[in-house]
Amino acid sequence: MLASVTSPHAVVTEVLTESTTAEIAVTAIVVAAALFGFGSIYRSADVRSTIFRVVGLTVALMTLSVQVVQKGWLTRFDGPTTDWMVAHRSSGLNHVAVAVTDLGSPIATAVLGIAAGAFLSWRARSVIPGIAVIGTVGAAAVASTVLKAIVGRERPPTATQVLLETDHSFPSGHVTGTAALIGIIVLVVATQYTPAVKRLLMLLTVVVTVIVALTRVYLGVHWLTDVIAGAVLATLAVTIGGAVFHFLNSRWPARHGALAESENGVLV
Image (tube, rainbow, N blue to C red; front, side, top):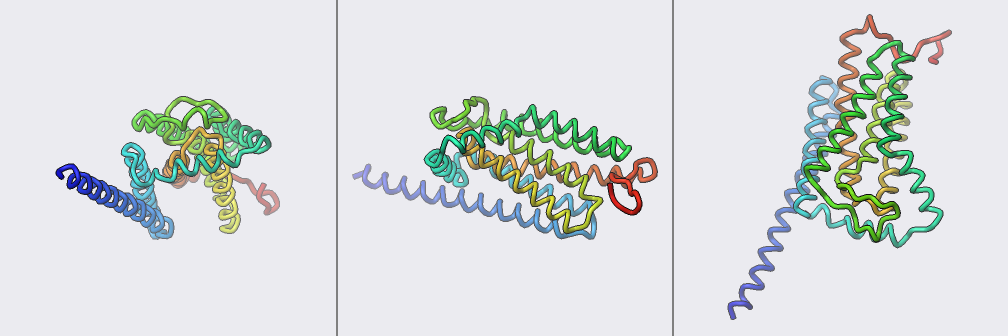
C-alpha cells in the first residue's frame, strides 16, 4: 500500500519539478531576448545599448549552460534533432558538411582572423581594426574553451559521428569562431556603408552561422544546444568587440583613418 502511494507522489513531484524548471528556463530566455532586443533598438546612448545587449546575451548563455548541466527542459530537443539529421544523411551531403566544417575549424578561423585583421589594419592605416578583429576572435575562442571545461558536456555517441571528436561538446567552437570572425569583420567594414548594405551583410553572417551550425549537428559531433550556445557566445564577443572598436575610433579620430579611402568620391 505504501509503495502504491509513494509511486504516484514521486511522479507528481517529478512532473511539478520539471514544469517549474522549464518555466524558469523559458522565462530567463524571454528576459534575455527582451534585454537584447531593447538594447538593439535603444540608440540614445551607445554604452547603455551595449550593456543591455551584453546582459541579455550573458543571461541566455548562463541559462543554456545551467540547462545543459542539469539536463533540463531546453535540452529535450537535442536527441530528436540529432536522430533526424542522422536519418537524412547522404554521401553527397556528408562531403559538403565535412568541407564546411573544415573551413570553420579553430585553426582555419585563427589563420583567417589574423589575416583579416592585418589586411583591414593595412587598408585603414590603423591598428584599430586589427585589434578589434583579432581580439574578438581570440576572446571568443578562449571563452569557448573555458566554458567547455566548466560544463564538461560529452559529445553525441561516436556511433552517430561522421568525424570522430571526443573533447567536450558545449559550446560549439566551430560556430563560436566562425560567427565571431565574420560578425566582427562585417561590423568593422559595414561602418562605411548604408544601412541597407549593413543589413545585407548581417544577414550574410546569420546565414553562414546557421550553415556551420547545421553541419556540426548533421555530422553528429554536437547537440542542438551546443551550436545555439556557440552562436550566442559569438554574438556576445562581437557586441563587446564592436563596442571597443567604436570606442577606440572615437578616442583617436585624428590618428586613425577610416576603413575605406575615397577616390573621386567612390569608396574603394
